[in-house]
Image (cartoon, rainbow, N blue to C red):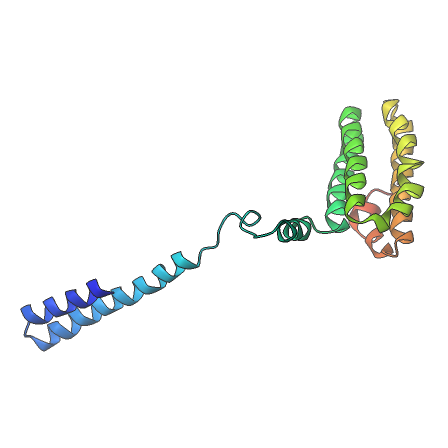
Length: 181
């Protein structure tokens, strides 16, 4: 800012024409005012160390927990993999279907660490019974058995949503587009 003021005074000393002086002053003033927000903006940039900048481990862990969110993140990944699994079966790509099926199990198990209240239904409806049966169906690499397994998984997903009192989740394309036709 001091540099701007010096420029203005030098301009005043060299130029006695009032119009030129007013224009010169205005240009320099606008330039100086434009520089102020840039300087302030640079100072306002937050640290990239959003975990390590916290003073205590409790604060760090709270930030990590907030970032990882709840079971909604788990279900988002499961939904993505469900759709990829469906497409893999349509393409007769049993290895890809098995890959996503295994990842769905890991994702749900990891999600239960964050939301243990979901464990009872997840295990009873999906992990303990449905998952191994469907895995066997996919491993058979038999198209009829694999599709039968897929629809068993679909039914288990929808039943679990109902049991968890979020049955509205069943009313979306991933479920009604994958119905028996």
